[in-house]
Image (cartoon, rainbow, N blue to C red; front, side, top):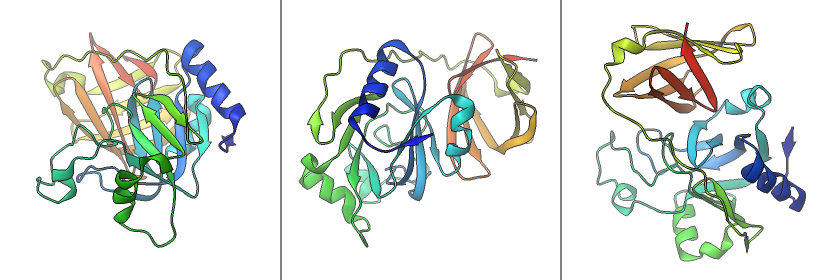
Length: 244
């Protein structure tokens, strides 16, 4: 179910952060990522898992029910990074550069949600920098710090997963199955993945890249996501996978 911004929604999110583990999905927003490789989206979704961004782009909303996500309708809003890489903004970094301040899979979840202005283009980042108080919502490390323009008490930040970078990518080829046998992810040697969900074949398909123990996905629908391997276990989008 998609929910608009309400006080009741904030209560649900707060209860979830202190006693639950449901991901948060900010849906249908215009997204300024601050990442030259991913680019921006006129309409897309940002998926959070704990304190980090785990997916971004169009098409993530289709799996919201599967993942038990709390979905926040951001139609009519624009999402921008709270910390802006000005060198990146001026086009002075190579296109392959992954900014640590960008809204990108694997990065800490830090962004602001602003009311969109009709016809506005790149000036949206400048508008936020000039007047940060216009933000309806501010997310810091995955927690809501500002809601409806007012500060929110942040008491319990989620811990990050530590990642080792030692493994060869070849060792991760094959089929990975989550603990509930709901998601089957097939990683093939040609750099493609094919995901079965709840018995639905080819629910998601796309390309992947493995660097050390990190895997980045770009789905054919257009969104980006990531995962991490640790002790022969794959952690991805709130799921824990073991090799078949």
